[in-house]
Length: 568
Image 1 (spheres, rainbow, N blue to C red):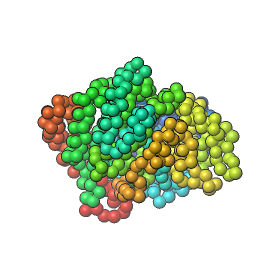
Image 2 (image 1 turned 180 degrees about the vertical axis):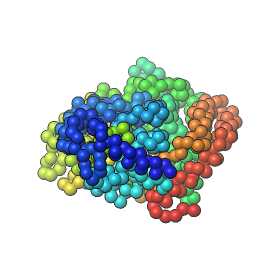
Image 3 (image 1 turned 120 degrees about the vertical axis):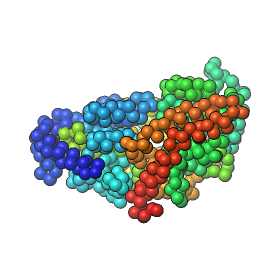
Image 4 (image 1 turned 45 degrees about the vertical axis):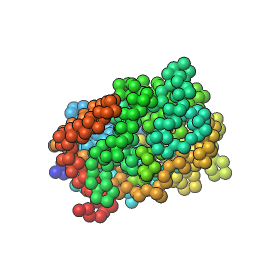
């Protein structure tokens, strides 16, 4: 019924569009005879679209950057963009949109897309892509079914933009992190398990209780809002053969899903954090500090270790690079609970991920999809990833090359470089090929390929890597070949029911997790098991088992949609 209603809504919208003005300032009343929607006449005439992104974008410069100006020159499009701030993930803002019916033209909704679909705020892009988006069709090709919303509602409500098609991993940005100065002083010790990680932090802080006159912090966590998943709870799963499926652990043979906290091995990870806290190795403020305080500590250089991923703390690390303090930046290690487990960071899950959508508020969806399609073209992708030829890169003997002075700014003055150039700021606005894919000229679409990655490393990083007989951080991690492709894709992108019992139970369990995991970590060691047992009991009392059954059914349906095979 929801799918039918959506189609009716789109037909009604098409009729309205014949009588209304286009988005922004297109100022042209031409109508496309194929779609019945306004096309804006001249495809490059000035037009603006409103946009909301569910992630923060601190370097956004209102398209006044060099890439942004070039995008506008090529397409006529300007974006009046708003991004979520802090650790909200767009949840509050999008909930308000769904309640009020006040939507932007374009939206990157992340995990909140379902709320907008159920509010009939999102256009089915299937026909628009078929009629007006040859670049998207070419790029997605055999992966078109992975854009479908669900097996019951096979409309396309978003186009994946945060994950590239054909993505290969040439570097590691996750795992556990340790400052280079720490590793060097300790003679580059082995770091494979949580015990190894702990021993490194302890040995260094005992010799250096202060850093630049301030107390040294062996390990700090970001538990502000949903970021607690990244630095605290996900790591219990990641260190124990988990496949990073958000709040759940999925059995790869039966597809049964359970809240990952229920796995006995994960209890041991939280017990380890409890030990670190009581031994003075875990920052006492980890569960009360705000994200800006967390980042300020990292930027000060006094945090020895992290349990995160570089996009989460990158802004703070960039401040260290800008100050020339490369020895205070971080190496990446695939740390696990014990050596019997493997880190699954390099595991492939295919083409799947958060994406961009067009809402029913957009008066010119044809022009909008053509804009997204241009970004998906070879020209659009090279511009977004490399910048402008002759300014940000040169072509030498047919090969794209970043000049040394440009690369130096890109690596060591990252934030200012991004604001000025716009390179990498437009990733989420259009689909793209991933790292390792080459265009018709034989050049990589992105700048993340082995030679360029190595050239981007500081001398400090190269020294650390050499000590571990590695050329990139990926060399330290289990390879893709060792890990099976996940049939269910990226479960963080799988939409779940936004009505009924599921959401009620999910919120109850989230509230319990947000309170009880920190409580277990801070509790006296001899009471840890009691608190953890109470935590698990509270989850089941809140309805976790019923929720897990619903989620398991969704996973099985998704595998069926993605693979075409029937699942019992």
